[in-house]
Image 1 (cartoon, rainbow over the protein chains, first blue to last red):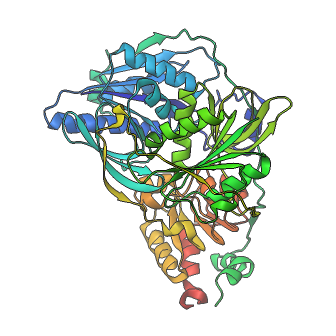
Image 2 (image 1 turned 90 degrees about the horizontal axis):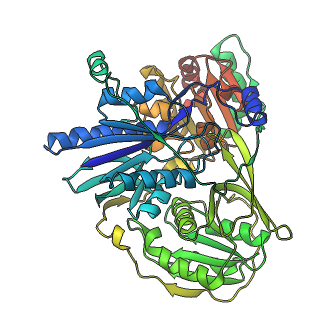
Image 3 (image 1 turned 135 degrees about the vertical axis):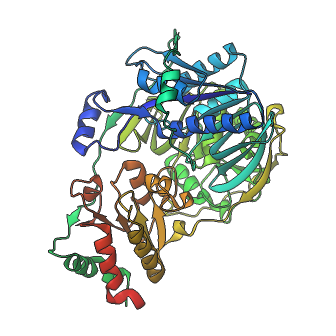
Length: 263
Length: 314
């Protein structure tokens, strides 16, 4: 079985303060000062790819597991670690730094890559990437490749070499479906959402493997760069003072709980 | 500009009435399309100029793919410039697939839109960068497909309209979709969605004793428990009760958040709480300025105090 995982390396946004966000909004969305790591749903997809490979290997099925990202930056550490945890090949589409990416252009690039590679049985990707937060690439790829897509996937189990059983959310319901390959799976929150950590031995064994960098020449597309701004919270954030937990809770009682929790 | 509004009527979510009234109040002569087994109650009062019901039984693995041929037929007949979908998973998927098929542009999770017919432009607002920033797009590429979030609390005005035209769409699974089948489906709604009181736990609730106290308190207060993504992935509570952009968005009278930093993807799940209280050891945590009331202390201290208070046996 041939498996491809599409992933992103994204800025870690959780630690940015409101003032930093204001600066980012005024500064052409420059997030170059922020630490980057695997996008959180993409990390789950990468781990699901490995788990699928493990399960198929136990069934004595031959598996080729590859990963691809679209990025101007090399991100060598993050990409090389994928070899150490079990990826057979890692590709990076080297786009122009500063180019404004929309889901359409990413889906187009991925579709061209998949066709050049003569197709995959399973294509995994995170449900939504950090940035434009569109969550559209899997459906676009599904249309471009004429391959079905199942989204909001939280678990994947192989049935045999041609079918998988996937647990997914469909319109906020939880469903289990049997799907045939080829298939595109949009991965969301899974029980195993973090990528496994390679051992030193695995790292050393993967040292000689090289990331394949694919040059990208794209035609100009009709992209729309939005006007962006930061808007703070309307809530006041009043800190309830007190020397002891009892004093603080008593204030909370007087201000809120007394109304909401009538005795 | 011709505008079309499409809603997939699903069992557990969405608000077709609020959606059609939002669109109808902004644009005259809207073509309304409802996809689903039955028309929702009150559908005849939706402010649309023409109404089509694409009758499709759900759930199935992909009701969207099955409905697309009938939807495309309607779009060919009406040739709208702007096609709005209710921002549900089905609506979002249909918007994307139709945009690709019709070489249009697509934007999802729109908070608001404004049409400027003189300039032939559509302005769309949405949030980007994990809900941290607002963005306004100026669009002049048509057809334009938008999935629109609506506020279900808005005022709805009635208007008598002609009967809906029913178009029956037999499931038309396309060749590339045919071998997939649904084995099991659970469409029961999560009580969190309608909870009056929500107690949410974040990564700071690492102490098992504190989690036990919170569970006891939830029973006494008849509250529901929610959880942040990191706390769920740490095994503190079930992923099915996850709050946030990729989980459940609650609207309780009171939400108390214990030990969460207040990242925007999580805050999107609790921002509609009438009163939001944060308990956190770190006075610099982002949630402290995104809540109504904040207490700087350990979660366990506060939970112990809450557990001892006299309302425990109300």
